[in-house]
Image (cartoon, rainbow, N blue to C red; front, top):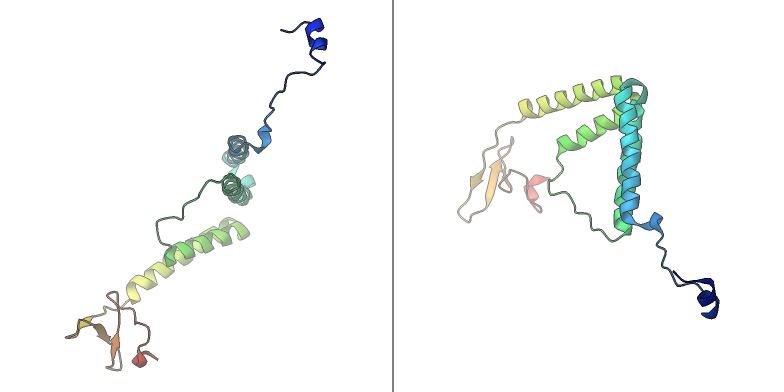
Length: 162
């Protein structure tokens, strides 16, 4: 420790001190968002019927978390799993549920099950043929040969597929 005499002899200037602004620190931001999310979840656990609308706040907190991470140079990876039509329908049902409450969720889940059932029952077996050049095709209802890929999807530029 410096006594008063030495302090004034040095010109009266205190030692330089680096003070970090902790509010801009990524870990502090992430911990604050975590605490807010945990408080929201605690409310939902306490009374899910009263605080069910808080899911929208959790979604906003996830976006805030991603934003804070990107602001600090953290690269976020694109999910490896490709989104399917079923994923889109589930997300839409969830959105409707958040807008209309529990009855909306029930209606959304019922809708998802009906769509899934229709897709699996109404899909006809598609036979794919290979010609002598290695090209793939299938025969449609009119008897026309339609060029396609290995999954039966018509290829681009097929004149017969208009």
